Amino acid sequence: MNKKTALITFLLFLGITPIWLVAQPIEMADTMRSEGKIYVVVAIVLVIFAGLIGYLFILDRKITRIEKKLPSKKD
Amino acid sequence: MKPWLKVLATLLLLYTIVAGFLFDVPRLNIVNETIRALYFHVPMWFGMVVLFLVSTVYSIQYLRGPSIEKDIYAVEFANTGLLLGLLGIVTGMIWANYTWGSPWHGDPKQNGAAISLLVYLAYFVLRGSVENEDQRARLSAVYNIFAFAAMIPLIFVIPRMTSSMHPGSGGNPGFNMYDLDSKMRMVFYPAVAGWILLGVWIASLRIRVRIIDEKIQNLENE
Image (tube, rainbow over the protein chains, first blue to last red):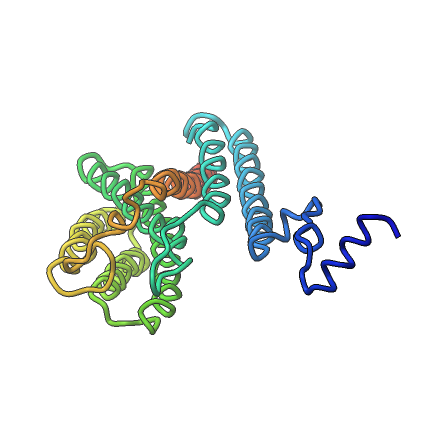
């Protein structure tokens, strides 16, 4: 048993949990899980919005194509 | 509509969604996180009023010098404005359900908005009931101007004169009191601009389809 393990064992025995055992911030890619997973909602809304806007752009292009098919001047 | 405006609308709304959900907002009783609906519900009405205003301007222009295109512009702007208004009233009902206690509270602001929408619905009923094209365009242009004139007091004046729970009405301050730090303005103004631009874009697509339709009819009549 090395010194560090001995210290932890001793502290735990006293009913004290060393801080480095409790709050060990392990860095992970957890943006999407933080703040009540609000980022997931943002991602979903963004996907829907992107879909709708993309659809509008395509519709716009289609209308432009049809406009070009018609004779440019009235009659 | 210029292409860069469409891109601008897209960027503004992307910003609105991200910032609207994630940026800090004031902590308030009852309202809680629903204050974020400000970025989505209120711009519907701003958009509706702007589109109705444009529609009215085209109706006035039609009466000054009739042309089929001015009539098409007036109708399609009113049509898209009505869409935004309907979305505004439905989102308002959802919001009211969780902050005022019931979806329809008989609040002057709600009633005024509903009557305005009915007035504009009648515009389309009127158009549908006249066979002659010139007569339809002229009658509906006159009606459209009256509809806009009726909407202003219904939405902006009467709710301020009586007691209303809606922010910005009946002695209630607008949301200005909540964002003294201007944090919400940073999202709200871009949101309003973005939603208005989106409305104009949709209206412009409808107008172009109608003009194509008109041209095809002219070709067939030759």
